[in-house]
Image 1 (spheres, protein in one colour):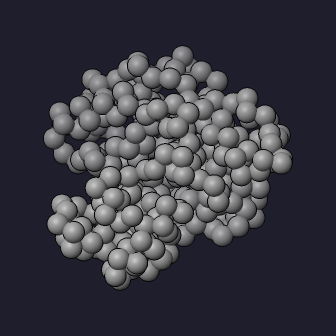
Image 2 (cartoon, protein in one colour):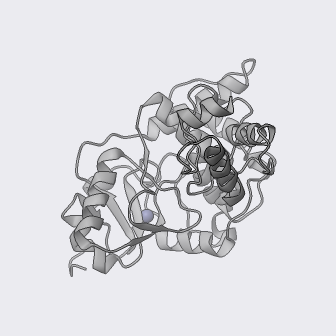
Image 3 (tube, helix red, strand yellow):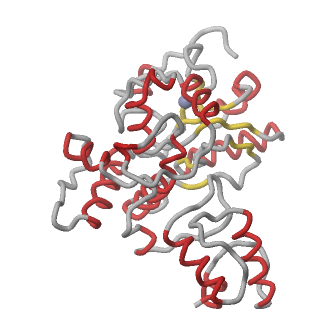
Length: 305
Ligand SMILES: [Zn+2]
């Protein structure tokens, strides 16, 4: 790592600083939980994985508002911490891919994208859960899909810096920001996502779709179900279901599991696309003479209909 601390004041803008190492350690300690069956305001601490269902809806909704705003990078040579959402903006992913290819080894990643639902929980739980979280939803630098926390930052620094990534400095050793250009500020999009989702599910109690974070949006977020809303963004545009990271969950997974059952395949209808569902999809694909890859694309869907 370089001897001088990089001046990051120009690239962090009005982002507030939070030590990622502390947050990630706290998350790792708290482990992975199933999504909480209740509202965000009642969510027990201290693992943000309890809001996985809603977080997946928020990411999908953002991509409906801005196509390919965030793309998954779990196809790269990476080892992911269980709670990490492997999403970045496309050009940031490209820079990451080049750095990994150049070094030629697997990268261990503790955190990448954090949704506003996760940030709200971290902000509320704060020191009670051992987190030093100072930024309300929308202000953390992990919410634009341009930040990454890695293991072995010393080893990765020269490779990442050659491909548009800048090391934050000694205050937050695992943290890198993408400064390579071709990116956009997604903080408004993240707010629009919850505002649109809320309105779709509460036509008689709508809130302003202004992309800002005020008391109205905070209240809506607090009263959102941690498992996700009944009317989901994938009702509008289906997502490709597969065994992803973190595990995909939601009403579309439930529908898939029910269809598999109807087709005579043994699978439990638990809303989560885990190893059991993966096995069931492959079994179904084999039965139908399709490529048994466990990915539910158009051909598999057609056969399931
Ligand atoms: Zn970070």
